[in-house]
Length: 308
Ligand SMILES: NC(=O)c1ccc[n+]([C@@H]2O[C@H](COP(=O)([O-])OP(=O)(O)OC[C@H]3O[C@@H](n4cnc5c(N)ncnc54)[C@H](O)[C@@H]3O)[C@@H](O)[C@H]2O)c1
Image (cartoon, rainbow, N blue to C red; front, side, top):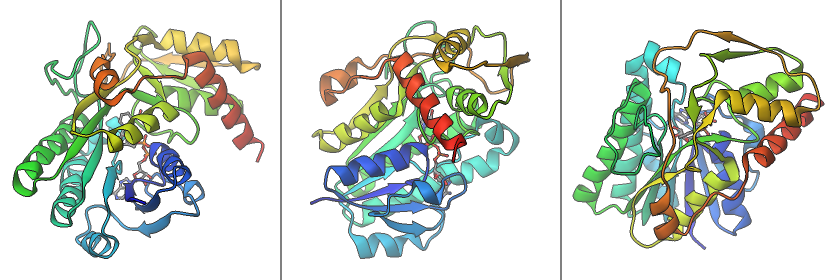
């Protein structure tokens, strides 16, 4: 039974991933500083270490646990914070990641699966971006996620560390942290559930590629099993505008959805979608959850949270 570590395992994607790994029978530990993650999302069957990924003390955990697989998701994910405090973002997303990768290299981890970002990395794209599309980061967040990818390459040279990079599209679903990377569906659905108005930044024509959280988790699990590593885009391959998201929420909501428009913010990409043909071919991954279905599940979860 493989021993897995999920960094960021109290967060949105990390906690859903932890649940799935445990369901599959794996032994899972979580490292998280709970800066945006929540204790109640932690799977009680996972071993929890409350610690920052930047701490030199994480080496003791690696030495003790001898992990086979490491899923690295812990990150500062707020693009606006990265614009306001780029050095902080660098510390968390580039240096913190390097600290995790070094431990993996030094402790014979079989493979590291690094969750990177597709939407932010390629910048504005008029057609779905492939893995070879020019990297054009427009925010410190994207720059530091890319720096972490390059550090992984270096760690393969230095330690022979096998790795897979998953460049995720915009992920949505239950437990989403509302300050996160374009978490428009998470923000809007929780406002809807609370009866609060939402703010749409920009004119509604901005596009993103959205992937439901169980599909993102599915990609992580596939990446663990697949032989050779590599870099993979994980998205639906379809540009969805903010206006379309609003219509889909209105259609499924069953209650009034109120929003107002404000000017767009710096660091935001205008058009984005990902070509995931490589993941389909090599990992055998494809997105299964349709947007309307995913939104309806997310609304149901938000309403349930509200009633607690
Ligand atoms: N949500 C998306 O749409 C999306 C898209 C592309 C990539 N990603 C990537 O997926 C990963 C998970 O994102 P998420 O949406 O679940 O965000 P999240 O904020 O819910 O999860 C991040 C987790 O990491 C923890 N964390 C943050 N800094 C830490 C540190 N220094 N030390 C230890 N723990 C720390 C937080 O407490 C949180 O539990 C991130 O790496 C993010 O860049 C997310």
